[in-house]
Amino acid sequence: MFDHVADRKKLEILAENMKLRNFEAVVAKNKQEALSFLQESIPSGAEVMTASSTTLKEIGFVDYLSSSESKLISLQNKINQENDESKRQDLRRKSVTADYFVSSVNAVTEDGVLVAVDATGSRTGAMPFAAKKLILVVGAQKITKDLDEAMRRIREYVFPLENERAMKAYGAGSMFGKWVILEREAMPGRIKVILVEEALGF
Image (cartoon, rainbow, N blue to C red; front, top):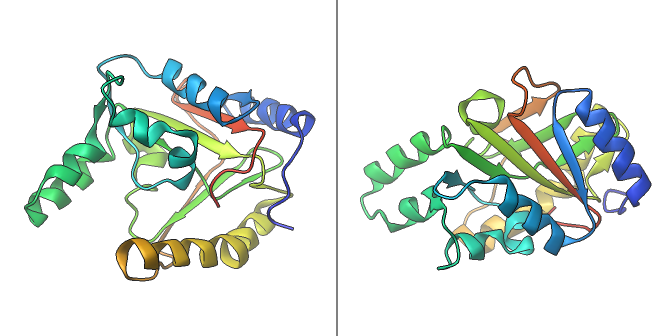
């Protein structure tokens, strides 16, 4: 139920609904086109934060940020390179105010409401206001009928998968910590959503 991949027509309707909420929205036919859209959306020399995102790994953006090809400043790489734990935490807090915060969400309703949850808030803290620009890459399997179904998708489908990933990556399970619901954006051009005609992330 929660992994059905929507077709392009449904994604295009969703994109139009998002525009009514003051979100920019485009539809990419695959992960390669999504990566191209993302690269074109961020100017050379900009500071970029990604936090942890399976979707961004799957489209190749995480590898791109660490490559010699990238002309972007990766705040996540700076955090990873810091050995002092207190300084690392300070960098994490500052990173939510990045020029460009790039991530995904866990669910999106048919009428364009975006829903995300984090254990710590390292991702959700940037989304409502802190990040100057927010770009979200969203797989076509994340669309739900309404907000109630979005919450069910996250609790019943996303969480077990994310908990398993966290156990492998960190040796500890995940939890429901900080939720954010993006219903409308006040600042024109601040939020851009790249909808992809493939299943990406959880």
